[in-house]
Length: 174
Image 1 (cartoon, rainbow, N blue to C red):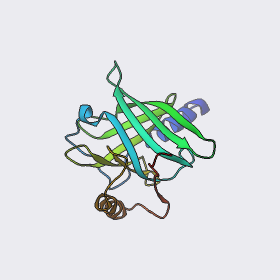
Image 2 (image 1 turned 90 degrees about the vertical axis):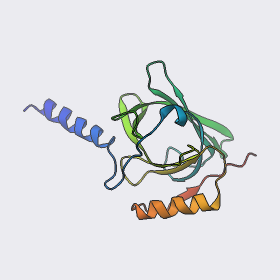
Image 3 (image 1 turned 180 degrees about the vertical axis):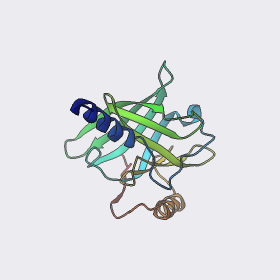
Image 4 (image 1 turned 60 degrees about the vertical axis):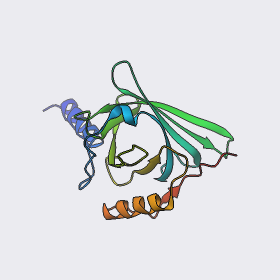
């Protein structure tokens, strides 16, 4: 096997690993993409450099002509006084009735988007990535009840997430 083939195989395995699910986390089934489309507000998250310092974070999902999902993530950076926005594309990893997608914001590189809890009204969702470093509570309204937040934390802990770095997202408007 040539070095080039080994490098290509390694890259393929690394990228495929980014679209998997964390051990013990199962995506929701009976998922309805059309009901999921629209605006979601970020209520809580494990912080990462790509969202650091952002408040009023939203995600807008719309269907593209090819059936993929257009993703627009937007948040306010109080330090610069400016809104930051990034556009991506999501596609289902398997069946479209399973809440496991892969999302790309940077060309051919995809990362997992795993919806592991979703209420029947599609008013809140618990989401992770390919590992337990990624966690979000999203809701259709900018504020969640204390009961929902507590359930989110309890569920996340039970699934093995470390919540020491959990951030409650400021959704108040200046």
